[in-house]
Length: 276
Image 1 (tube, rainbow, N blue to C red):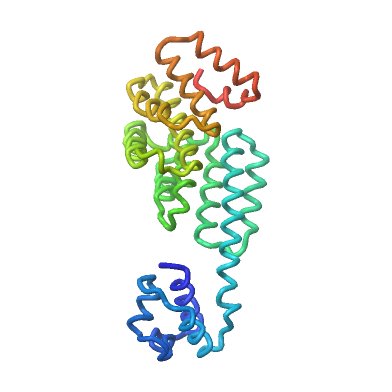
Image 2: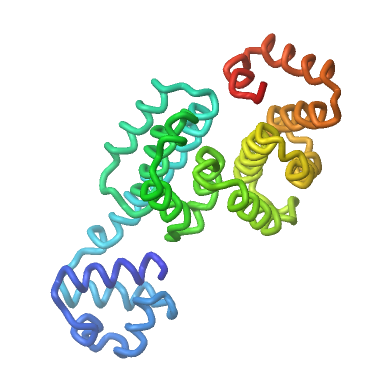
């Protein structure tokens, strides 16, 4: 359903009208019904005439569109900051961003979904917390991951999976990772933000596999990571990928050199979270 169709349906319900009454003879009921579902594009003159029939000003009708658009910009900016804060284990910044998300009104489905993801990551950022989750809570998290409302959430969904991948058992996680990577084989058409989220997901999964001594599961994800573009935004995940490749190849000196460089350049918190 497109915005105009969704807004017409909401307005009609607020006015307590049937589709026949809402169409008001301006357009056929059949055409109007399809317009509500986003199957027909309704002309601006027809919209204005329908609004006039029901004494609704164009300003009131379209104001929600501007608010919704502005709010999405705010949420996107906050979630981008949130990803960085979560990656750096910055508890203060995480709490601040969640508070800012809660203050955005109205709370649309997109905003609520973003807020749920942020709170889930905040509550499971520590591995010990994830391990203590009961089966019911883990299933609840899995349902949230695969709730589908808009394509805009795909980036946030991958970020969420990257942070709580260990709510799955290793077999489930491997199936999930392979499915995601197969979906995004055409790397030249993937959005840069999504590419970064995928790279973090790979690093977290490989770290887990290496820690469980499941070396055979590391090869395909690391190969995917290595084949990603040499973009500066992907530099850190790709360096982590090199670290794990060195560990797998028993190149311990090279792996330690990478850790030392990361510590020296200010990534000591990230190093602490790496498998030791």
